[in-house]
Image 1 (spheres, helix red, strand yellow):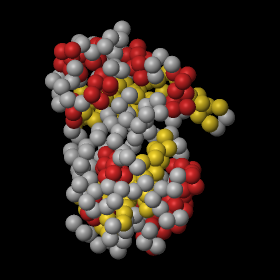
Image 2 (cartoon, rainbow, N blue to C red):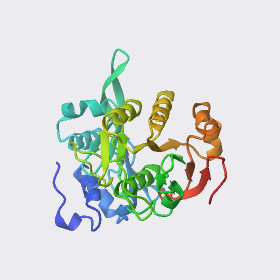
Image 3 (cartoon, helix red, strand yellow):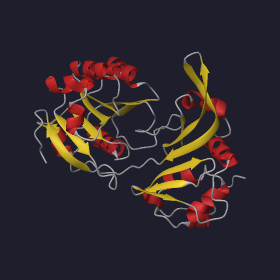
Length: 319
């Protein structure tokens, strides 16, 4: 049965981590706490029926196999999903169609199982067999070193962040948004519009943004990126628009439209290098038309948000 964390179980740092442990079944929570891990560096908790729980801590994977009954059961999967949804899965049906729930603290609970279709549209997921809890991390100030490269003559430069999955591009994007929104010695604060399709940037929970995105930020939560960028341009008059993981031609066209309307753009994309993105037909116009003035490449998974290279629109490495 579910019970609240007792005082001696409370994590000494980071209330957000506590909100993750609260949705786990009691025995699983105890197994994780017995490992005496640095939970501030916890990135993922993966649960698969019949397999040991897998954790990713500081970029390294570990399995909990030293305790009795270490393999995840269907009941534990079901309990976790029920806790995450507050025992009201119907209320989260829209999110579950996309394969995840967002819980307090901005953490995302991804799910895999049997997909229920309504025609060609996904209606829901049942018989859930796997759960992946991705921990939302805020690293305030992680963009300090790169921000001077993104500002020129008091204006934000159109910037594309390139990184493989799990390298901290969303973490870096979040802090860039915060600093542009609040302003700094390099830049007066700007009105920033954020399209947060998977509720990862703001981590909204019940309509409340869980992460610090600054004082001049407007957020569209759980909104498709292509439509969201157009909505922001038409309704909110943003000076800067931020989106995570551009991946379709429709999104590329909306991004170009926003730029043509005078908005500066901060976006991310999956990729291993500047050269890889340069070679993809979908992104050719970025380079031939010089749409982005800065390209940040992240590679180091052990230090989320660490920038390895910065390129300008000519492909010259600036650092």
